[in-house]
Length: 282
Image (tube, rainbow, N blue to C red; front, side):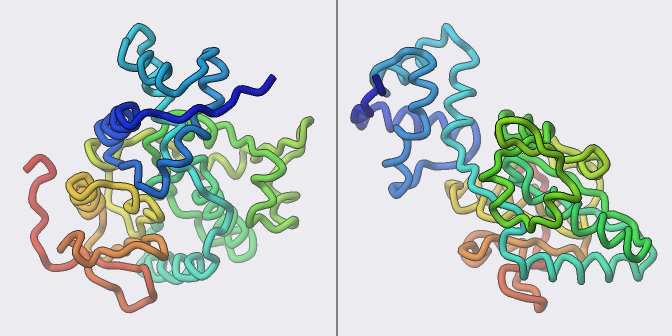
């Protein structure tokens, strides 16, 4: 018999909110609080718990050190799809072409990559361009705060539902192999173009080197004010002076940070401002 979803006490929601913010910098927004029980229900079933309050008590008990991490992985918003917002990829092509005209191989950071659809979309686009024109595939670094999401991204394994979200059939057949149970696995020759790493934007140092392009789409939406400022500082520290930052359609730097200003290339694209970037630890 299916387990009924039970209401969660306000105290338990406060504990989960504090845990999520402490570990990731993200908040449980009011419009997301109603889905907390839904995303945690599979974990409750696995642990044979009848209420969310029981799950929270088990986290606070601390006897299972992995439980808190699994709760965090469930709470982190992992909404993503292949080739999300196609116009963004047009800007990416133009940016990379400019870098290559300067005689360099471009470097791209997908920050908050979830289960990997964004960096894989980049890899497909540039691998196909390489086959057609002989141009190099940019170096692609992809990070996410969720260890579970990064593990899935590294595996390159997706459900039929996931590959049908934004991925044209031609590219699905070209870059994926079908498996039993309606699963699709990314071919190694595509996956090798991406380096996946677990990283918390609000506390961890940025990947080494300077980036020409940083994609951080629909991530800042969930950060509290101070963690958001730290995340922007981390990103700014990793960008070349001419680099570009791409945020989600509903995001902005206005009123959030002075380190970036709107770029002229399109909506949601930002460049570094002239404001001095203080040390990350300051």
